[in-house]
Image 1 (cartoon, rainbow, N blue to C red):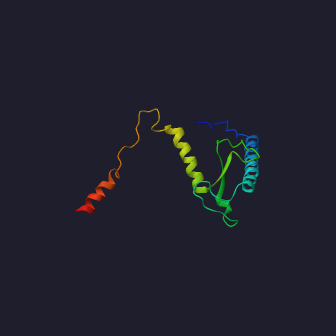
Image 2 (cartoon, one colour; image 1 turned 90 degrees about the vertical axis):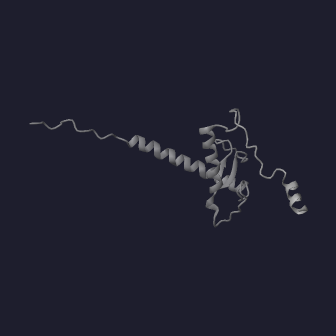
Image 3 (tube, one colour; image 1 turned 120 degrees about the horizontal axis):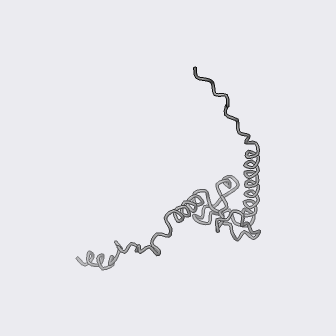
Amino acid sequence: MVGRRKDKKKKMDTSKLDTIVKKAHSDSSEREQGYREQSLKIHPWVCGRCGKTFTRDNLQLLTVHHIDSDHNNNPPDGSNWENLCIYCHDNEHQKMNEFYTYGDVGVDQGDTAAIHNPFADLKSKMNKKTES
């Protein structure tokens, strides 16, 4: 007869970890609200990339981007912030992720830029058509 396992799995006490994570989220939210509110007071409610203008009705779609990617660098003059719409902000972070993953493509890797120009000599081609 197979005996029962006497040592039941002990339940891990995660209360300390839960407290630390909760505080980290709280601190992050508090810090974010602080610099976001400051940026909205300093900078116009316009996306720095696409130029979309925001009002109180859609202001939740305007985010604050840290230019140097350091979320703890929040100078009171706003020099490390730019207001971006959520789409441009996502695009900016995607570009950064690609840079970290693939590096600066085309620089110091022997790659060359595209050299084909479909509009090269377009003027002379158009002149030939009009002369015919």
